[in-house]
Image (cartoon, rainbow, N blue to C red; front, side, top):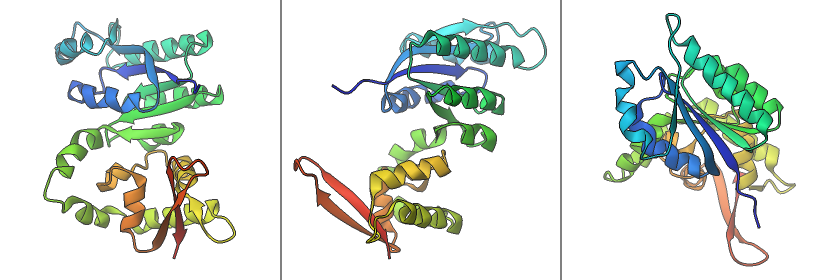
Length: 242
């Protein structure tokens, strides 16, 4: 039996809009079971009022942190202290840090040093240091917009190809080469893992594709091939540079 990954979800209430909560929790469930769910903020402040209606629906525990000084350093500190307490309790296998704030860069680095997986979720304004400190970083905007775009007239995927820059193309090609066998073929699962190590915020949905396979198939610089598994239950996708 495969062990289910237990995830501690810690949300910076000052920094994450409540409108994303449904899509965010659905995304997190792809990687494991959220066994600890907490959100931090000063709940006496009006700007957090929108959160109150969705906390019970998603079983998220609010943590009150008064703003003793100007800014939100108190909220950040409370979240960091809780994260370290959870780390030493050995109750979870991974963390999800929901924030667009670079103040959590050191925390993400420390949790990964301890051997835990770290997922980051935030808006596209998130600074690069926090993004690269995570194993995987997901933009909130793509969670909200992908479904809407996929229901359009089918032109979205073709249009979004123009968003794939030469820099991204080089990374895709080198990742395929790095993971390839002597014949140049690479298992797409290995390629995807390697891409995330190089660029944690890479996501096929950023370019209008739900998965990595259709993204590679859309680019004529790659060959793709389906192969049967030994047990015949699933098809394995392999890719090669042309």
